Length: 182
Image (cartoon, rainbow, N blue to C red):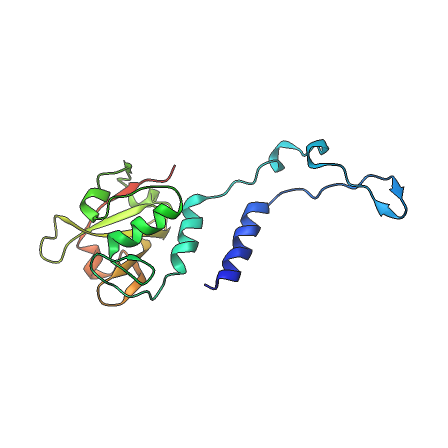
């Protein structure tokens, strides 16, 4: 996603539902006089724009689709799976450890995949030890009826991609999910 499009999306999210500033009926020299922001009484549902941090994190994550994989990578030049999560969460003020096993011990467990939300972390067994955490992904979306989810992650073969939990490789290695975002 181009940076300009991202900025437009962010502005739309931030200003959703915000009422326009009313102009006063008084006109002076054919110029509308607009009261200061503090003097405008905006009804409660419109006074604060609520932003879904998880959805916003996913939008930012998608900017990095196609970024190459590198073991230990933690920058937009190259990521490994845990480094990708660390980098994105840091942008939102969260400090994660740099390896999957430690990340899997943070936050609150989400035991039912039907309850996963965008931005939750999902963990999978490694190639050789499928019962030991070896891979991190970030939930993009979830089918709340079936629990099938899509996740964005840094894969060794293709770099940053979006995968489905039903792909055989990930389906047999899924271990747990954690919610870090408040």
